[in-house]
Image (cartoon, rainbow, N blue to C red):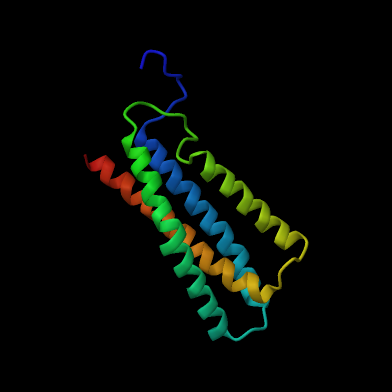
Length: 144
């Protein structure tokens, strides 16, 4: 620990940082999804079903297992860690790819609003719940 850089942080800080990052992502994606939802001429029921399917896939197949994996990894740390280590390299690459894809899809109109609106709403709810899961791990760690 004598050689640990002063900017390194605790497991608690990593979990809280992960929670905040995922919640910010969820809120930002939700804002885009809702703005698009409002202007999209598609039945409310159809949009809702598509959003629900998107949420279920991302929450239970992708982000849920990912948050458990990352939380377990963070909780295994014994000393201070780099403040960006709440993601591993693969996680950072996936995040950069997904953000780039999202920006590109909207900037270049690669997909219709009938896809973007429900997809972004479902995705945003899954992102936000993942942030809440990290927050739950953080609360549990603080009770120890």
